[in-house]
Image 1 (spheres, one colour):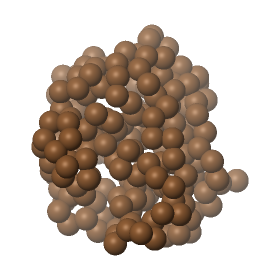
Image 2 (cartoon, rainbow, N blue to C red; image 1 turned 60 degrees about the vertical axis):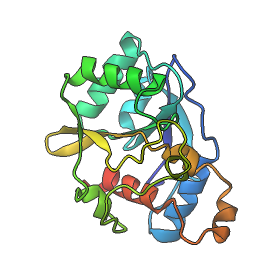
Image 3 (cartoon, rainbow, N blue to C red; image 1 turned 180 degrees about the vertical axis):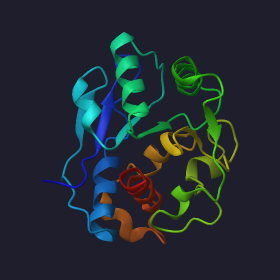
Image 4 (tube, one colour; image 1 turned 135 degrees about the vertical axis):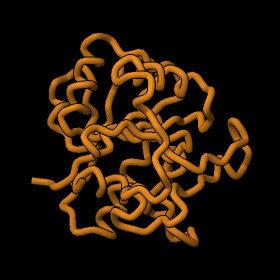
Length: 205
């Protein structure tokens, strides 16, 4: 049985099926750098399906509206409060796009207005496998002035009992890592290494 399966959450609103090559790329990195037994393909589970409650790591992303229905909201809250980990990535790479506004509103409605907060750049997630001394690595989308023309020097999180339950990014890591894993040889530095940190934090914290 695999130690890790990449689980993508399918939600009824918006476009959940973005950055389709990213999971294979990240799985390749986990095989390269860690000793985890990795399931070779991502699994897609509807957020309203109770099966998602058993995944140690879930990913959700998109460009558009996030509006959970009753069952989706109940599963999301139960999962996070009971020790699950969700990595949510805004593919608009801005702070005022539809995904950002609607996702943040959903988190406030479920966990409270102040639950989603910036995490410090010396947080354990930046040292869970590789070291990122300056906090979250910058994406090419930010450097190219896409979206809001900002480089986000922080990530946000919802912390439950001292542990990150929801990690939230406006940096568009999903699209940054959305390339065929065989093209890594052209990069000066493998930009998926931070993804390895996120997974290792989710599995070990």
